[in-house]
Image (cartoon, rainbow, N blue to C red; front, side, top):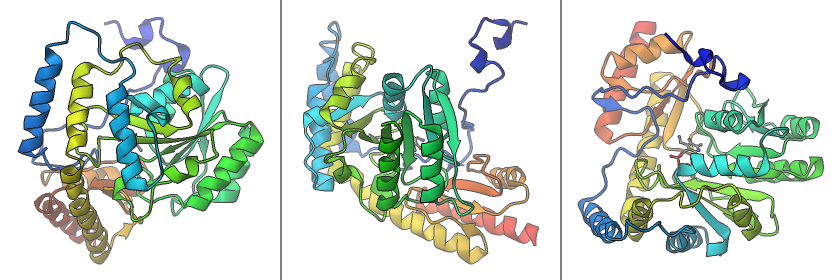
Length: 367
Ligand code: PMP
């Protein structure tokens, strides 16, 4: 049988595994930080209308620059942060994973490096590898915060071309303070200068504010966002960034022509017309997230502070065995490989109750 390693694949891909959260068919799925609420029927209708219109023109390539969509994304950012964002500041792609890939293709790649403070979103490192970028695992403290001195020292030592800061961080859930991001930006400019990518995939769930206003006067700063979480549209595959217009011009050097299909653009525009309805679920999920934190602590678990739509909890001597115990009770959560900890996404109240019943039972077994 021919396997991957029998093919002439690039050396750095040998023996590696692809990104893979298990997609198991169980009653309660709280493992991929999705929004548990299906899209409201009126939005499904509007998507159908918009896609029907787009379908008539599918013989033509889509708007290569996604102007209408980027204009509406800019409006959403301006409305929700109070910081004026224009079309020229916004770029969109198929999920923020593609945004990150385009940023690494533009600013990193062979002979260059990128750093993230781990544990953090594993795709930053995997996309780095895929783009031929050297990956540097930066430090995080035992309580999962970023120590400014340790982090700025790592930047000064390695002089990376791209610095990732994920806030709120995945899989730990905690936000990175504004002052820390500012200090990392200064360190990155002094060392190279390099690009700083703030991944705000979960920002709508945060107790705090977006760092978008920091873009003023900082051309090497990028804020990355997604419609996968707060908008409840993971299946749409729409991510975007806000930055200085020069950054938007630069990523266009690597983007594939017509990368955003007409169907994707039409669907995303329909979703943006319903921002108000979609964001109502965010408040509900934030309340459920806070309930999960409180109840897990009451049961006796150690819980990392969460500003996201998921919660990291522990400690387990054998997290994988605990994960299995919970799965055997019909609830799929995530073992991210963080020693001692597991992660659960906030679901509907009923789903969260099923999860809490399972972890209460687990705690009894462990006593
Ligand atoms: N950034 C972070 C921190 C994430 O957790 C995720 C999704 N798990 C993404 C980016 C990618 O999201 P998408 O490609 O769906 O926009």
